[in-house]
Length: 286
Image (tube, rainbow, N blue to C red; front, side, top):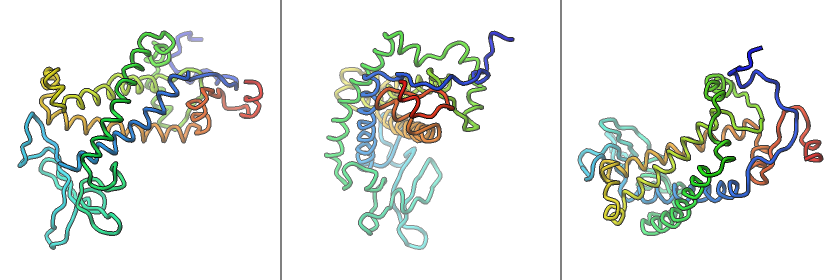
């Protein structure tokens, strides 16, 4: 037998039992951040609606935006919503640029149901955004420090050598929508969480800070790192929607791989291993 088998699915599944998977700090951080990120996204779309164009560099080149969401009249004279990306134009009537609000067509980049608050209200959108950011950013910093200094957390999020070698098999396993309940995250999960925790989320915070004139005065190097305030705004927008894509995939996998088991682990910390024993029996002996 090869003692260095790199296929993480070659061994039989663990016998069914319930373990403690997530500590209290992780569970509280997860749910508080979920609320913060929903508020940040919806209020951020409200702020974007005030000037629905993105640029590269330090200045706004109004004649040549990298992306623009607007309303215009088509060749037949009817109003239409449009997304412009470079030289391309996409008709997005009813969703982006021109959408219905209380049955009436409303010219706005993102529809009212996607923004916080619903009406066109830039000042209140900024208040909501900054309030959530002041909760989110310190909690993120605390969680990253906790992850770095806690041996248990490092083991939980850093792939082992065998998991690195077994990544192709893990990806193929997930592509076939097959999931195994084990005490440890698999290599693909760990790599994804590392990229989000130490890449995407910090970049969201830093690009947000780069858009602040106060932070530009305190940390002018941020403008050099991100290529100017308008580039930082564009990157902030891109990172936000990469995060939305992660959440959609994450939620889909939670639903497919066992919604009750996954939700229980993030609410109570208890996670069921194995697929054969009924959950009631596990709970009695947990």
